[in-house]
Amino acid sequence: MAAVAKDSGGRSAAPPARAGRARSSAKGEQTRARLIAAARTLLAGELSEGFTTRNVAALSGVSHGMCHYHFQDRTDLVLAVIEDIRPEWITPLEAAVSGPGSFAERAERVVGLLGRPEGAELSHLHSALHWQALNDSRVRESLESEYRRWRACFVGLFQVLADECGGGLDPRHLGLAVAAAVDGLAAMDSLGADGGTEPVLRTLIRTLAAGAGSGP
Image (cartoon, rainbow, N blue to C red; front, side, top):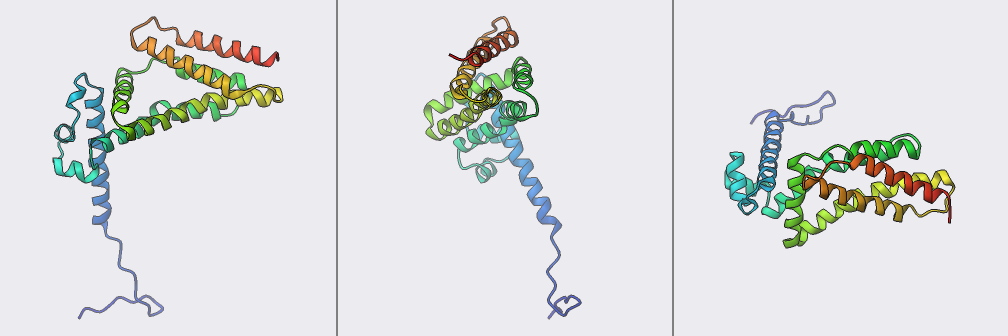
């Protein structure tokens, strides 16, 4: 029988960590990332009916069985895509609002961020995800949760104004009004309308802020 390794106190020493396990975990994460990237590509494409786990697996160069090892079904893949795109639209907005500065400074960061044209892939993904949400309650719940988080950014922005004014205004209604306007501007831009998001949004926020600050 092989001798059990002992530490200096005579206790059995823990077995050394296996490097193979770390490599296996890293490989699994890489495979998962490839599957999510393939799912994004298919969802953002024009042939949304081609979005199946089998097609995702084929596009990523992964076996169909391995795809189901990481994702139980196509809904799980869609949910992973929703989470994957969060740093591309929600996280930057949260950072713009929560960063230091006055209401005016934070508002200008928000306007500058939202004034940038949305990439074609992200725009197509949002449309595809909305379509998926119409037919899948799990996707609908996940997407609505993301939009609540997104709308909360605008409410948080006007909460800063409310704090500066010493109360007396409702940041929720003001924030939701701006969020709705941003939705409309994004829809116009996605149809190829003349880009004017930044000046329109700046004017809207300043007008609402001035009206709210002046009181009833």
